[in-house]
Image (cartoon, rainbow, N blue to C red; front, side):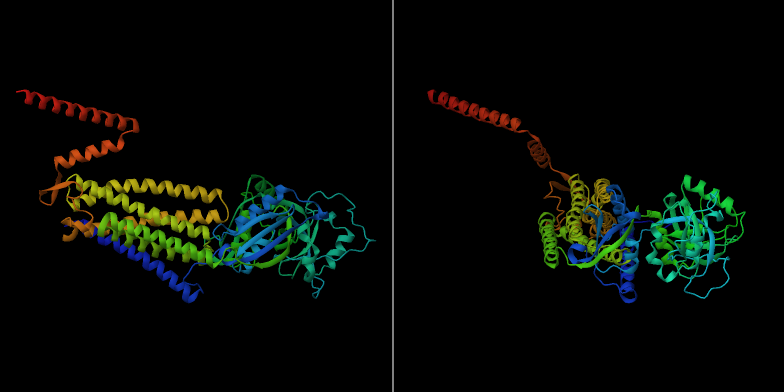
Length: 584
């Protein structure tokens, strides 16, 4: 026989789910504090804690001027790389520089993500070898790897123009005597000074692998990194579907990139090593140069190399967000102080406490002891919000700015509003003559629709604000959106279950005057079997008050004039009656 689900049983089940959520979040937070060097409080934003200021200046071939469109595009890409949770500030400075303000002490990975151009190119391999600062071994045969580059200046007496016009990117006619000497003498330990990341796309490139152990002479750029539409990190799968345990970056090209990549791989698959290799160049250094085993026509190549999960994910994110339109160098990196500081944070917290106190006073005054449910709900919502924000702060880089604190303060009122809607629906059901248990169930059905509609509008507003805004405004929108979702969770898993349980207690079900649910005070009279009905006087009085509230000013004045005329007529009739009685 199936167990019948009662309101009390459902209430305890909902409270158990809520307790599980609190315990799980608390467990994650505790584990972070013990093993991952978290703290019990969220990280603060740039305005409250200060941070690091970086100024990037463009580095272009021939010192060409950058356009405002290029700067704005670079600002947008850097914002995407940083992410909106940290509330970092990225803006243009003057006509050419970019100003980046990062909260706290950013780690090395974040700094590299911000400062790196992430300019990716695909070039055919012409020659490979070892750098001049290492012992020279057999040349020719390569092994793919990663970036590096530095080129020695060739002798002016050597020809640097091809004797015959190259037909494609793999044509050895690109290798002039001057270029051959430069390749032979390249020193990978000085690669960063060679400015290979600003090399012309239509000319060959002498560079190194990213670990500095191999040199490359590459043909012109044949596939641009800008044709990459998506990039993800993942582990390599064998042809049998077995996980090899090695990390790689999976690339997806757009239509143009797919066509170009297919054309090049069709050509390379017919050549001998090392000319069958296709070098993947990131910021002027080769990160991988795999040999072409077959033509790749689906536009989904895979980059392999000495990746771990973190490095593969970093590279995938950089490629996904796109390369900067121009290369930048770090002009300066300084530590900056908080723009607001602890005093403003303290004032914000005091404002929140005052708001919470006002909500408490109103709830207790309006709903008597039923207002304690509101206070308990706010406390539970506060605990879950704190746990959730602390985890987001340390796991995803969320920073709490003063705008975020303002969002939390606004959320107090929004959360209390849900409880008020529910309480008033219960009172309406009591006025209609229901008992408290029935009023709780019927009122919940009506209140839930209203609450969900209101919270949907709040959540939609927060999402739109987060998408369209930047910086601190995004922090406000994020806080508002998260607290809106938590508000619904609290109403469903705490407030409603608690009222279901209170409806079974004698204090509340009997309509004690201090319960806030006294049917007599609400305009209903007892009719037996724990049910009430409206008295006719209360019904007429309530209808009269409602009609009075809905009157316009003109209607109210007209009614007052009518009342005065009626009073005057009554007085005249009384005098007339008195006069007649005297004559008799």
